[in-house]
Image (cartoon, rainbow, N blue to C red):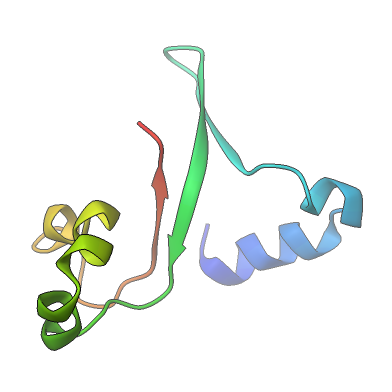
Length: 78
């Protein structure tokens, strides 16, 4: 699924459903985990140095080297 497909699914949902919490279901474990953020673009290095308390918890240090730079991603409360 790409971001356009995801947007199409979301836009087809009734408004009351779009206002509910976004969650991820882990089928193997039976856990339901809430999404906490959508990161559409990464901050530049200067912004991360200026406000490390804002950017460090979002997981940029974890995804750097795994995803291409500026690849959008969602974070979960895990």
